[in-house]
Image (cartoon, rainbow, N blue to C red; front, top):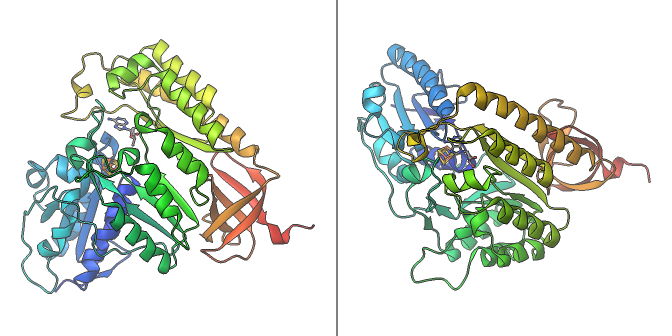
Amino acid sequence: MYRTYHVTTFGCQMNAHDSERIKGMLESLGLGESDRPETADVLVFNTCTIREKPDTRLAAYLGDAAARKRRHPDTVIAVGGCYAEAQRERIFELYPFVDVAFGPGSIPHLGDWISAGGFAVDRGRFGSHEHFAADLPTYRERRHQAWVQISMGCNSACSYCIVPAVRGREQSRRPGEIVAEVTRLAAEGVREVTLLGQNVNSWGRDLRPALDTEFGELLRAVDRIDGIERIRFTSPHPKDFRSPVIAAIADCAAVCEHVHLPLQSGSTRVLKRMRRTYSRARYLGLVDRLRSAIPDVALGTDVIVGFPGETDRDFEETLEVVEEVRFDSAFTFIYSPRRGTEAAEMPDQVPDDVKGARLERLVESVQRIAAERNVQRVGRFEQVLVEGPSRTDPALRRGRTRRNTTVNFEGSAAPGELVDVLVEGATSTTLRGREASLVAA
Ligand code: 5AD
Ligand code: SF4
């Protein structure tokens, strides 16, 4: 008889949301969440394979899971997500103690495979992409914020990226379904939604019959839903950032002034080899359009260093773009070859020490600029959605600004409330402040 489960999640927000659905499935089977993997009957690993690092971390976690299974042979070990899908031919050879493996597209079947109540586990089942299954039971960790998936898969062909191979072709969800889900969430007390897709701004183009609407219109429709105070979305692709989307962000009161705009490289030559289909100049032009249409917009980005064939000159161009745009936040990555992608086969791979040195210089720029950008907020009032106690000091509250910066602050507002906070201090990643009501007039 299986009673408890534990889910370990790797990777991006899409995976975090998939884990909410995995948990929803398990709860609907009558299992309860255990906060410790050492004692759970069903161990699920929702994996990522975007770079090599998550693969190695997973191997360590699975080692622990195998040890638990040796002590308690009834333990069920399930491996889902992107790594499982990428390794679908080999997963049971690599990890013979795994009972169930499933790709990101087959969460709806998980319940059939892991049956609670002592039935046999259907060892080795593997399912993959099917039609868009949106209405799964979902176990939401956060009361006032929710992810809403608007599409799955990706039609881009970035030469470094494994995602199209593991998550399949883009499939959009119909607008009526999305609006219905957000309306339901609003009724449950959700105040902030994040629309999720591998490429949100190409949303809808695959739907048949063809829609007479696009992502900008979807933002407007969600903005009209009562009770939703904040709308975020991730990630857009620079190549699909058309004017109606920018206009919608500017016009809609609930859409936050924050755009995550993956740059990847500042060299047009490298961008071409990455198959990003925009140039450095086009990216910079887009940044100008965003900044002139959306006052005070915060820009985030992703950057890869050490892509095959990247020269010192190419890397300097990336640094130049970082210095010119002055991003509010940036995720920086060392290029990691992924089996089956075009770039992994390119001849001129960059040596590890060169990659490491480039990353160090990039991180230095990114952090210095982010800290300077945050210091500029000091002395201003920012609207904050309260999330809970501060992670570092329980006497403080924690929340996020519309520009997506975490703020730790003095005050008494409850989770889910929107309060104005006076910013009094800043680091490269967080702000410090106090609630407006505590500030002497
Ligand atoms: N190596 C390093 N970084 C990668 N990313 C995607 N694929 C790779 C890879 N093979 C980065 C990109 C993407 C982010 C989610 O991960 O910057 O935007
Ligand atoms: Fe997310 Fe990509 Fe990792 Fe899959 S491989 S979890 S889509 S980051």
